[in-house]
Length: 113
Length: 114
Image (cartoon, rainbow over all chains, first blue to last red; front, side, top):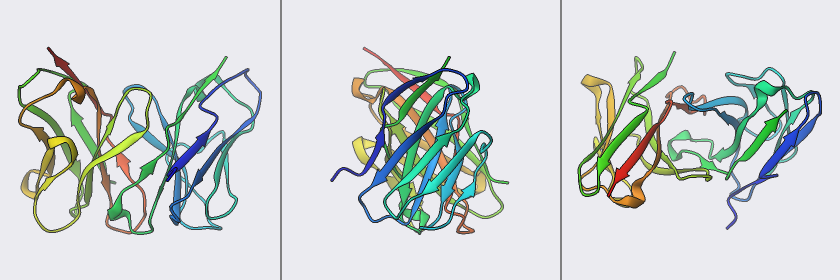
């Protein structure tokens, strides 16, 4: 089982460039999430999708957009990258019942110069 | 609003010593509680969780945590540290209002000295 797969693993962007981070899960989970991880700040929720066809803002949504393409895939788009978006991005998925916790992908390390 | 506080951004122990990582939460209603571990350059892996029932929960790799409602705490312990335990540990809470979202603490990096 692949679990949660994120691509790419590493990316360097110039300020103002755009890119899409891809995430796919093969566990038939209903809910999917995008977090960013910054030193000393833990993980902060960017956007989430409680179920196919729905998306909602999290704690730090500014500068990002998302698409829940189908039940398996949840992408994160940076329209105009800024140095403040340099971070490690994690995708996660879960059953609708949160008591099972999340399954995380291995992350995308993004640097904006 | 729910929040999670992890005391100590870094904890250093000797190999074989007790590991204690602290986590306190704020919530008017006991939430679901989780501990995750992150090894270098990897994603987060679930260590253990408390949902309902027994307040002492056991997880992988010999870790356990005890939910103490009166102290709003969920501290993580391991009797004897191993070099392979060196990693970053995150406490997380899930509000019981079915919002699906986990709220993470800022993390504690565990260093294990030989």
